[in-house]
Image (cartoon, rainbow, N blue to C red; front, side, top):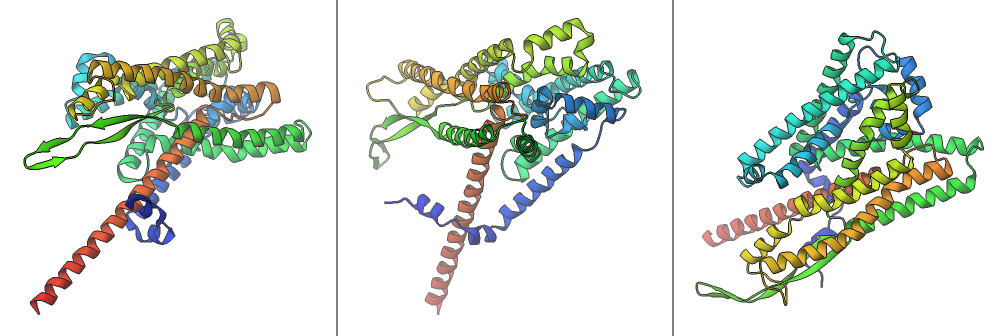
Length: 449
């Protein structure tokens, strides 16, 4: 027999959606801010030689340029004011979260509630400014070296740094506004929009090469089926759970006796989400981005760096997998699923795992389970992230697909749909409460009469 919540989810339809005025306002607000973001990707940074930049992007579109365009929504290819994207903020957030797990003062600050959270967010903004400034200056120097600037010099560097850092901070503000007043996670939706915006042009380029005979029809059909299979696999793995049964003893509060029961502690196969591939990509893309834009053929160090750490190179793939596995374990055990905190919460709620004593024994068992789960989770992340490199190297696919982009698209879609359903269910609950109040008023009026 279906529960009340399941019956309510089944009753969600377009009529219910049309009656949820607050949800519609949130969706319209979110779409409006995302349109502002897309417009900003077409506003160029001052002092850029657009003709030389276009020629450069065309030559690099199948390698690093295609990867960067996918993550920035095409802004890096047009050198727009949002060319850095939201990646500096994400990198700063991850660094602060890792520091919170390692630095006792920051961990104590996190436990102080709302004030502590605001302080940590302030540190994250400071870190975003520092990272964005460093990346913007490196990109400005690289543009000068690559002869992509109209008037090289300190004036161009300062203007480029101010524009790119301001664009990143504006994107951070947009993301916070979407999260607070819109629907879904704003930062994730900005990345999601950038990825989706580049998909039609990438597909068109892929099919045009098939029509011209560069890629065989068999490869095109195989890639289409592979894309569908990968998306299905990612959805399955992101929803996969390892459930641990938790028992609660019978307890008495005052004159009332509560019967004991049991529930499940869900542990995802991939508890860290898209954090490991994003952080690994950020670390590996920075040196190769500078090497690419600076014209690596004229610089021995940059040429060697790109030769060994360029996308698709064995050393790049090896370090990519190692960092994904490392951050999957580190982020899960220190941030997203801290076994000591989970064990303490279960102990405070009088919950226990059958045959295991509460406290340290429960924490040790949870750590053992999580470590074994992460073997599968990190292998899954590594396999999905290596897919685009295999497609480009073996089948000459001219666009970046797979890895972090697929994980972000699937995760953001699932999270946004879940939030929409939550708003619709809340609207239905409000409607039921209003109806019950009206019935109560009618009954009272009838009694008075």
